[in-house]
Amino acid sequence: MSLLRISNLFLSIAQIPILHEISLDIAPGEIVAITGESGSGKSMTALATIGLLPESAVVDGQIELEGTNLLKLTEPEMCTVRGARIGMVFQEPMTALNPVQTIGAQVAETILQHESISRSEAFTRARAVLNRVGLPEDRFPLTRYPHELSGGQRQRVVIAMAIALRPRLLIADEPTTALDVTTQARILDLLKDLARDFGMGLMIITHDLAVVAGMADRIAVMQNGRIVETGPTEQLFSNMKHPYTRALFEASAHKVDLPPAPPPEPLLAVRNVVRRYRQPRSRLFGTRPEINAVDDVSFTLHHGERLGLVGESGCGKSTLTRAILGLEPVQGGSITVDGAPVWAGLRPNMEVRRKMQVVFQDPYSSFNPRHRVERLVAEPFFLLPDPPRGEAREARVAEALVAVGLKASDANRYIHEFSGGQRQRIAIARALINDPTLIVFDEAVSALDVSVRAQCLDLIADLCRLRPLSYLFISHDLSVVRSITDRVMVMQAGAIVEQGPTEQVFANPKHPYTQTLLAAAPKLPDIKKMNHAS
Image (cartoon, rainbow, N blue to C red; front, side):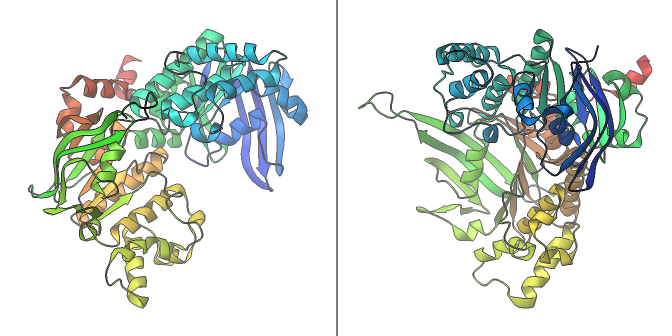
């Protein structure tokens, strides 16, 4: 018997068709993955199920939860369903949580909204749920605030809120996109265990087939608001019938063709760098303890080399990056670019800063939405003592846009008019416009779906062929790092625990931590072996 049955679902918003003839069943305890590119209709299917559509939405068809047609319920009636019978885990936990309320209060609120019990009883049950999702009382008291937790821990709080009343259906919308591989593996295992233990149906939405290959019972592939292929996971992978499904699989396993690196010539030299942070006092007049976020780190990045940096959240990657870019001072060691120090006394060395650029994870939030693309791409000119003006400036912007596969006329548009992949191309154009010596890619493709990610990685490889591009590529996605770098460094607890040629480290990891990271990374099934077995 079906727990959730979606039949011939049509959805339009402001008279624009979004979903077409969506039909999907989920049984109790079953895990069904909905996958596809951004804009394929995955999230809209989930929002239609939980009744969180905009007022201009027009819906036709049926969405039945244990025989109840949710589309016939009024808003007050749906409020009794959300949280109690359907739970939702959103992609970004920090925006799903209230930053001024404790985690205990937020989990207890879900219980108090649906049951007439005392606050003390609600907090007792909240404590039990937090224990169940791996946040024990001795380390994570109910008085903690969201900002005191890591990304994976915050996601566990969101999951605790969603399952507090043991709903019959749990919807997880891209629950692991921004998480590192070990945290991602733990969250996926947690969701899988909860579905099995509570008998919940689990609808998990993702753009990456590798994420759900090892956990989903069935997969539905969506394109342009339609389900183009569906079936049991193993059967779908071994016999992909639709061209779009095959294209998604190939994009998930995409390998770029990097040109050979030139002979080694030092560019960035990091020597015995230490970055400490003071912690709060444990007592009124006690000393403030210190933590080494970066602990005696040394490495060299050569001209024309592509160097990767991987590690879990909190390992020190971002702190090290800020120090390299001259955004934070260090308490020990030195950082030089072409022999010149990044810091000149107590101030950043602007001559060195001009040689470095960065591409951030979220291109939309790294741009001012009120400015046109021309101004956004030309921002690095402000670092120059004599920046180009007039026609020379316009020509440089046009050249940078064309280099990343866009049109010169795109300079007159606003950033909201572009897709996620196009925005990241604009971010790369901005990084290239001053011909920097070094570029830092900070999780630059983590937020992109697999096909757009493949296009951006191919773009970076093409740029390496056209110009002597040197970059530090930071990512939690090990498959991306393996494809786009010559050498890789593995960071744990502020220290580099292993480094070497990328293929050598991935094929034969020496350090236990590297082995753990590789074991936790999601993997696509081997199609050849599956076909041979069948």
